[in-house]
Image (cartoon, rainbow, N blue to C red; front, side, top):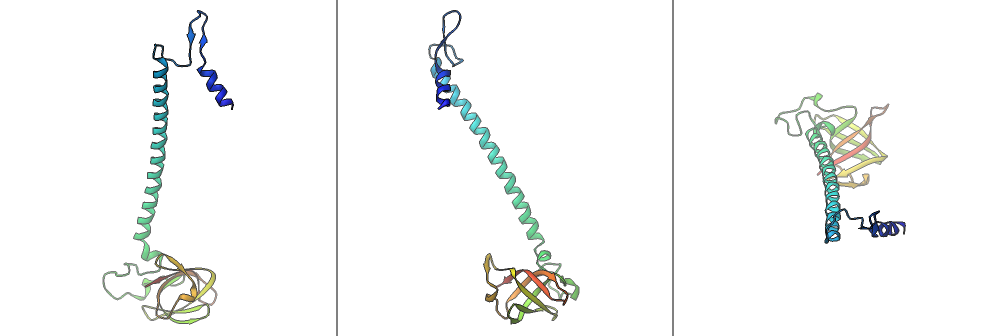
Amino acid sequence: MSYIKNYKFMNEEKQNSEGKHLTSCPVSSEHGEFWCGILKLVIIGLIGFVVLIIVFGAGVKVGTLKARYSYRWAENYHKNFAGPRGGFFGDWREFPAGDFISGHGVFGSIIKIDGNTLIIKEENNIEKTVLILDKTTVTSRRETIKSNELKIDDRIIVIGSPDDQGQIEAKFIRVIR
């Protein structure tokens, strides 16, 4: 309500010491109110344009950061998900035994499922035991699935932590179908 009072107060005509009528519009002519309205619209338009440019710039910045992250993530996908150093297809050779991350991940096929325990056979015929915990995330493509949807012969990538028995406590499992 005070805004309306202030607006009316600003637009009221006043008299200066010489007796001339004054208005809040700085343009002094017979069409002063018209040009004052145009001036207000131009100022509001400029302020709106500046705000729009700032928001657009922020969007570009966020988009750039997301694109940079996606690019780096894709470039290092095979490293992040326990794949071979040269990528999943590498240079079309047999991979030596040291090319896989051994303690914190595994990449291979499920050969046995026993409750929340998986036995995974790696490419070099080494079998690893993976424990599925309540907080383990299992994904297939872009969807999160339940751990009981895993099947024998599914090719998976597991990221986790080794326990005292040499098993991997899975934090993340990705099914490659």
